[in-house]
Length: 447
Image 1 (cartoon, rainbow, N blue to C red):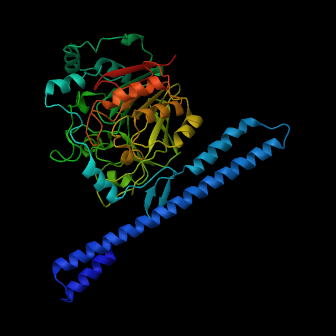
Image 2: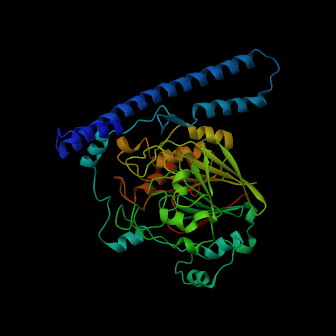
Image 3: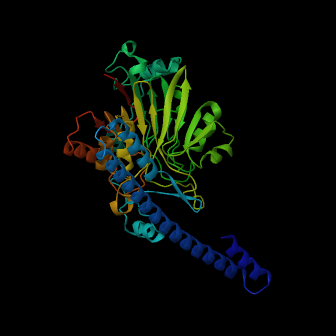
């Protein structure tokens, strides 16, 4: 890019071309450079993926031959070898300063693909001009503040007591007696739209992919929320950690970053820490796929594990895939929570389930999946989400990333309907995988 711009400026200084012609030449040179670079990266990616596949196949075959040649073999070590082979095949991959997907099923989208989607996409998403219909289909529920503060060990304020008491749908008082809950065997999950959840795992307060603003980019730019957030971040117990799956605007709100700052520990994929540092936030831990960290809170130790997903990253046209994308698994002494972020379906999830499963609760995306020809590599649909639920060995799952910002073509109420059909098709129980109401606090206890 710099060479193309330099040539254009040289011609301009020599008086050989006009300013518009020099700018046009620089743009043309940059475009050609990007096309050539993308083609080179794509070719290298395919070669590396195939090389990894063959290496794993040879490793597995050699191990099977060794086992078959020994009469008394310790098969307990077999799983460790499989884990190492899977980690090698599905390790993060960086080519030419850009992260790429190490999955054979991935396909990069071209500018022509994007233009064709825009030209042919459906509009409206079935949204009605009747606000009452929208409120009925996407009702807001007050979080169970008393429960959340009790399990976090924080003080429950009078304002929150009044807010909960004023809730007309009795969501605050349903079901469980707070005094009977054991914090060490309880998970709560409260969804606030898109992939933003406040999760409590054995007393650890976790915030995922935070965005509380009205639009994705600025107050005047980006898709607008269909419904407001059920409450503000300041109304909740203070998070201990924040999990950021990738840096897209609808998964990382700069205002939340400024508000929380260094009062929490941020767990982010490779290449993203510098973005936080530029905003004065230093309590940030970058993680590569399959990497583990220990987080200690109130004398308890939690394992934070970064696991692979099939997606991409970028906040503008110049930082595409400069940082990695990731899912996260948080394991306590008894329970575990999986935060997926955005992904297409890929074989890495079965490896995660085999190595770390079963998972107590999985937070999986179920929206932004139409048209499939364009979205399938980067966003799963509800049936794919059910397959991931099974791959992880998840006891329970909740469906997120729908009903918030419309950035695809499906009807805005299609995700929960398609999820229900997928659960029936694959024989899941009624409450095993649900699409929760906005703001409703779900409670899961270990048995």
